[in-house]
Image (tube, rainbow, N blue to C red; front, side, top):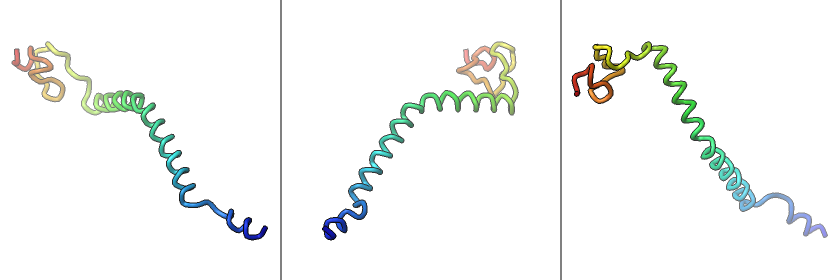
Length: 82
């Protein structure tokens, strides 16, 4: 009986690898499911930060080409791209 109890003492490398595989799968699935929400939140945060640093963008058609916010493709009326 003593030999049998000594053989079941600890986990093997295969058991550790299976546990690691399950954890990695759970993390990847949860990351894939939450990625679209994180992208939208990060985009809104960076837009608010850029407006806080650079100011509110000039509206297209105000007669001034602001290179920080407008170019010939975004506002051809102000920047001469039309």
